[in-house]
Length: 159
Image (tube, rainbow, N blue to C red; front, side, top):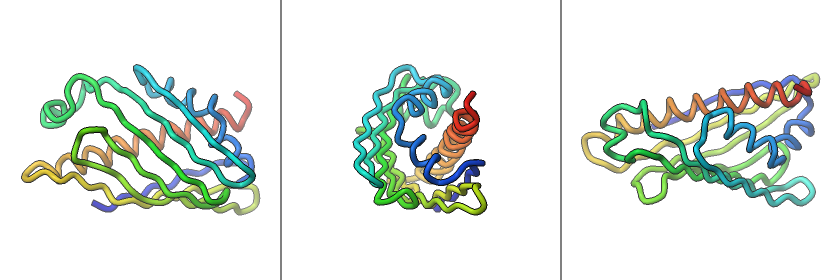
């Protein structure tokens, strides 16, 4: 399944990139989303960085087909490899489960406003229910990116 999402930040790209590389920002996003546990690791040098966020969320509220698949909790591993402040690859996996999200993040600035574009492929290799799980993962990813954008807007505004 193809996935696309766009986020807007009213700040220059260098400020958005710095925010995305701040472990405190990533932790704040995890807290906002109600993660049960999380670990954030960021390795940055100049205009590149690797971001690893391992999160555990409650599976409560997921459709029955999904909760059978993941159990009571869902572990999510997010990896971003930034080759510049404007470009990254991303991968989202659920350890031990046959599904993944792979794609790119691109940022561009126009007049002090940064647009962040996500483009990915969501793949769940399970007969019969794979498509439904891909749609559910897409909806969860959209919600997570909207939460990150909301926390990010407040962060950049100094709130």
